[in-house]
Image (cartoon, rainbow, N blue to C red; front, side, top):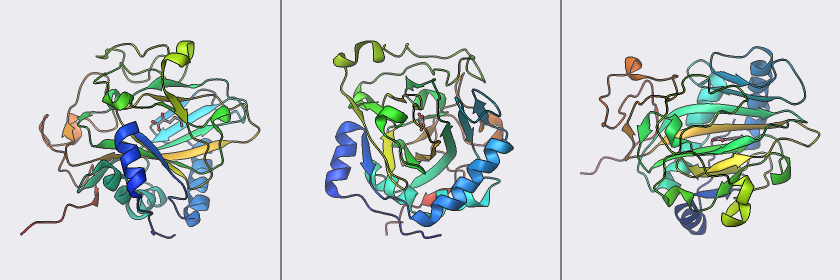
Length: 278
Ligand SMILES: O=C(O)CCC(=O)C(=O)O
């Protein structure tokens, strides 16, 4: 599996900084597709610990996600840390370093009616900082009409903090005592928002700020949509455990103090290390 990561162009860097999101075509070498799709098949058949599943066992109308596989899965760990995706994100963030927070496999079977609700990522996570982003890598083709991602361009700059939304019809799996405002009704008044979306081919990465509002329609197409999103912490990330944050890594797992940089090479491994200055 190749680790020849793609570096962004100046134009892509500027677009990420202004829009909060950019698509990097062919960011990931095709040699990763088959091993990652094998992991996805295994997860669907035999899910790990951290799963959201709207319709267990079904092959249609199912939104399935599994997160935090890298500590136990060699393919996912190598993809996250050796494919070059961390360097790409660090470069776009203008960060000297990039630590992996977690990986997130996202599947929408054909005929999935449930959209991915509009949300920001940062309120789900026990971190604060502007240099925090995801790289959502498509493993199957997807058009915006059939389940690729949409974003409210520039919303990473709104200084807003929206309470997490549930990805399935049940309440959110781990808590309901969130801080944050309600997400605006974007689908109800799309003309009031600068919504952009990206059609993708396998290997394309959509890199986006953890502060940007994003969502995705259901999958009205005839094939499974699969993506693997890796979540990244840049230089200014600080540990911020709070009610409602994702329970995969909590204060009891780390010795980091709230408000400090997450210098924990075991929980948040470095994919890109800052160069020491002399
Ligand atoms: O894949 C999806 O439908 C949603 C992805 C998403 O919200 C994310 O990666 O943060």
